[in-house]
Image (cartoon, rainbow, N blue to C red; front, side, top):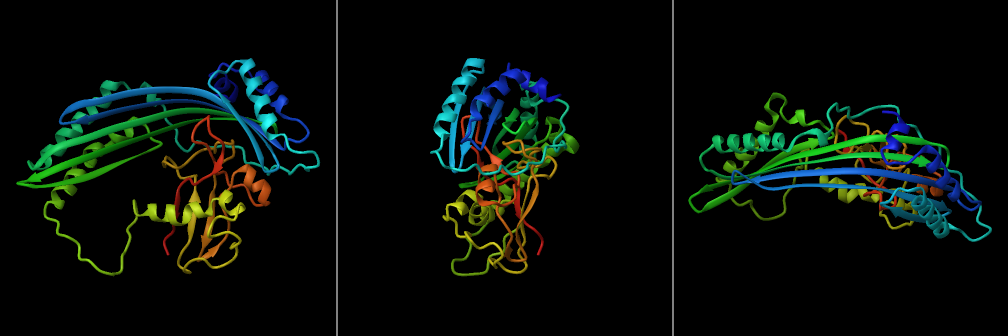
Length: 365
């Protein structure tokens, strides 16, 4: 699908987008962009063998941004007429209008996306609710079959299908289709008065068929059931101070929270991070190398492009204990004079851009 065809999905022509950008490009504005987003979210959940909830939501709109120095003007609209684009553009420009005398700061060069990290032939929205329910029914049966002590199974399947288009004041127009899904299973096991829980799941930027390949969904069900049954024989962990070894997987949340957020450029530009002004200095053990990699095929945090239209990359943040850099969006890369890493993220079209993580993890030491 071409960029112009995807832009037409929003009922907007290239000329109308350019007209809105022209209203933003005044002398004091360093950079401006339009972020169009169409999002379809669906969820189905089952408990006690019954579908307890099925929901679908659709949202669409545009975020309009203008930056001047450190100031950002932002406005959004869920109406995409030419008039609404003009109003949003004028509002963003007015907010960003900097005092006279501020000199423009060059916008860093961006990489135009040229890849497809999550090719999917059938859109999430084309998967019938009956197919989703059938998947959950099979999971429920498989988990109960694992052991008669499994008394309840709760399973949910959530999907998001997002189409985005980014038009910028430097003449770039890029688009992307960003699918996302997750299958989550929780089993409750009972043995007398002893009741325990086990959970397992998975997902990413993958097609519905991913969960059926090789009976993957059934494997998820057995693992959740296995964990619940195992917990029936669990004993209390000893108290006290002791060494703790963290495995791969969910323990990575500790790295995400304790280190990852501290390496986001906005906190470091404002000097509120523990890692501010430490580039080139030792901050960890020499066996510690941490990267942020948004280029891993089909992973949940991966993107062909970030929410500013820049290709994502693999950024080395800490190398053998030495801090090498931060993850950036256009604004903070421009103000700090550091490389653009393709980490500009928005919660949705109603939100401003912030430099945030993609897939952040520690390499083998």
